View 1: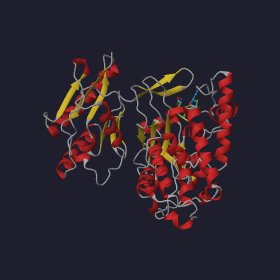
View 2: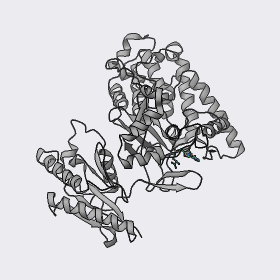
View 3: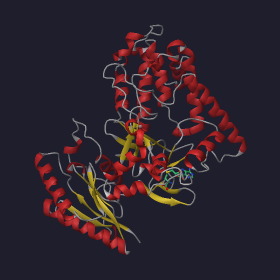
View 4: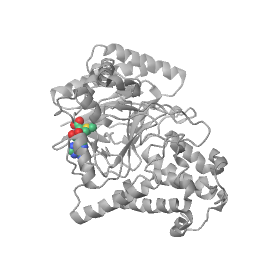
Length: 493
Ligand SMILES: C[S@@+](CC[C@H](N)C(=O)[O-])C[C@H]1O[C@@H](n2cnc3c(N)ncnc32)[C@H](O)[C@@H]1O
């Protein structure tokens, strides 16, 4: 029987200079204690112990709430308990036994903090603080006294290898993961990719090297391909503004030049398996330089977490062929396992979605500074808006609650913006913001930009370069509670 055990910091530390100094001393003492320990390693933002539960200590003390390991009767579990005991001792020496509160499930003990706030706090270890945030200086409120189960566990599935499986119910929009890449490659590495991987691996600590070396290699049967390259191809994900899914344009001032296209390997995110109807989405946050994974819909405990490896809406046969070729597996996700009649309907829908996208309605907002904005939206605004409406219907039918709608709403927004329709621009900007808050997280630069645009639709620089054919003011948004009527107005149906 395995139990969680740990300790809490109650009340949590503040951002005062005094608390910062105290925490730094504590972290230095931990580093000194475990200097030669192979289960101990230091990342850019925190210390991690490679033992049950992978407990972490952040470098910023105000982010810390709780430290917990899994313990039990086995040899390894006893070892985990020893790590905990040493960390508790050092913590008590620095902060006193009143503030350092140990607990153990085996004796009915529980963490003082709730699971969601512990999860949030651990995610924040790798996040940059908002400059104006006051939340970090106030003690955490007394909360539910349940222990903190991780949101997912890494397990092995018979046909898929390792997989991430939800351990608790996860709400739509929850940030499930936020982590730094182990290393990245970009265009500068393309002349010698294998050499670049080798030298980047060399710069990592041993546990991090192992994380890469134990990832799966879908090109294993290709004797001509170096295992480093096969592993990199199988597991890497986009890590810059430019690649699809991570790239966003900017309205006017402050636009930034494109970065070299980068991809990277992640310790945990790279373990996510594929589904053609995924329940989470990956993106790269250019502000925090972390890969993030968000829940696209509510996910019940026990369900596998999946992302889409393919970036389009191709029919089943085409998807399966590319997954087999690129990742060496026969996809049997729910979309690929539908009964024949439903499968045919799904294929037709996806073809329709593809046609609508090619007519100028995008899956995702295009790259910053993209000239692509001045296409369909400028030339055939009404048709573009109607296509957006149809596409939203089709995406909802195909992907249900997990449909990613930010790109479609963004196209609608641009169409209205291009013709000075401030009322609809504001409504669509808010819908893009809401969709991005789920897909990328509220702290993503684009979500924040969209919130600002929704608040002040006429503030956009793009007003200077467009027609005034649809001119309205922000006040022209109709009131009333008839939702269908509102949608007809919004899409000019
Ligand atoms: C990025 S890795 C994912 C983690 C991998 N399962 C592991 O054990 O390391 C990609 C590989 O996982 C497997 N995989 C991913 N999605 C799958 C799926 N839907 N069905 C079967 N295998 C899958 C394939 O072997 C693929 O090449």
